[in-house]
Image (cartoon, rainbow, N blue to C red; front, side, top):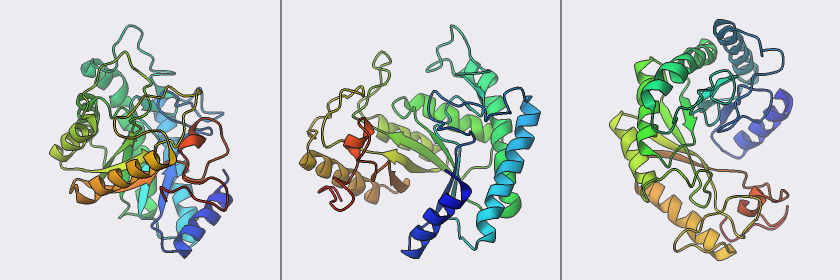
Amino acid sequence: CSREYALQVLKAGEKVGMQLCLFFYLSDQAAHGGKQKSPSGWENYSLEETAAALKQHTFETTKYYKDKGLNIDLYEIGNEIDFGITGYSFDTKLYLPGIDIFHDFSTVRQQIWAKEAVLLKAAIEGVKEVDPEAKIILHICTTEWPDLVEAFFQAMIDFEVPYDFAGLSYYPWLKWHPEVPSPSNYLDMSIEAIAKLGKETILCEVSFPSSTTPLLPIHEVTGYPFTLEGQAEWVHDLLRMAEINPHINTVFYFYPDNYIVEDCGAASLFINDEHPKPAI
């Protein structure tokens, strides 16, 4: 979306008393786990050139919104950035054939995270030149594997990436990699691993569907049927858990308003523009 459109959304949120999170995709298309493409025109940039371009982008964008008088509470640098950003990622320039990225942390650390840290530091520098007190989130999606979660956030500390919160995606009803085992209590374990590093967790993306969809790899969640009532119960229990867990700072629900699309629309919190689901 345009800066102008996002400005109107941020202003609308501020008007009703919401805290604001400025979210940088660091791409000109939707970036997420497994897809971290270079913006158009950046494809042939070196690592150093990409870092300089990112710093300029985050500086100009942050300045634009701060000059409009907005009080930005959080800055999310990238989206689901487990294995790279902005073209320097496992799905593009940093592909590692034959490497088990879910377990070979030493190789991933040397070949991906070290380079990613250069880019993240540059992007954060751009933000902090405008807003020195900015609170930074780094958000990953491999929550199912606590050892990987700990390795990533420890690496960012070791590479001196200045971040405040560790962000996680949490979709217990989705199984993108059923071939890779994970513990049943992986969310608790990942939050605990982050806490041991001295960081609080932000659940940057959570959702639960009120119906099934054949377009996604759905996995049954014990105790929570894919119904309006099941969705409401899951949302209630998750928020209650977050409220009493001292290591969780914030929870963001993913696409609560997007009831139109066929896949993740099942997890929206609205039936239509006028009628919320019971989970609200």
